[in-house]
Length: 168
Image (cartoon, rainbow, N blue to C red; front, side, top):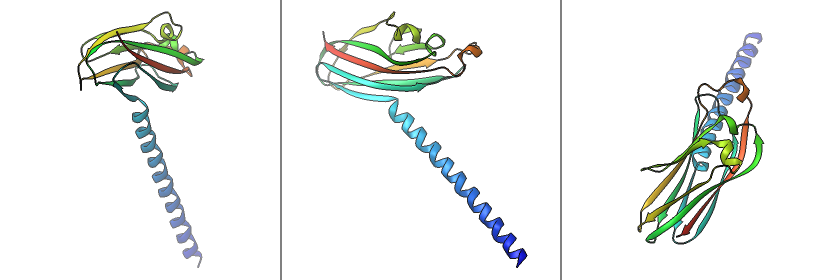
């Protein structure tokens, strides 16, 4: 009976380990799916529009990048003014360490520091000529340069990105 209780105890330990591994895999899978969903926002351009994308707890380490996208689908023809405004919610010190590149398939619209966008020192305003069913993807890439030092440890940023699309 002592051998049977040791054997039962061993089986119980293996079962708990397997349950723990499966739970961890499920959590990682759900976080990755949620991350992908939150990083893109599709907008139909059929007149003046305002959309908000939330960026919460942006944390990067040297050499790491994080990408966000606004996908604009034109429904009418015309020239539109496109403005991207940064609305800071909480300054966790990340701004001076992160490079921001804002681009489309054909051009780089902005390159600079996150801090300058959050402090309203830099503006992101450009025009685009839409035709019906045209798709314009605005890619916003946040990168912490590899040479960034220890002073960037434990920094983060919380902000909203407000996209304004107005008929010119």
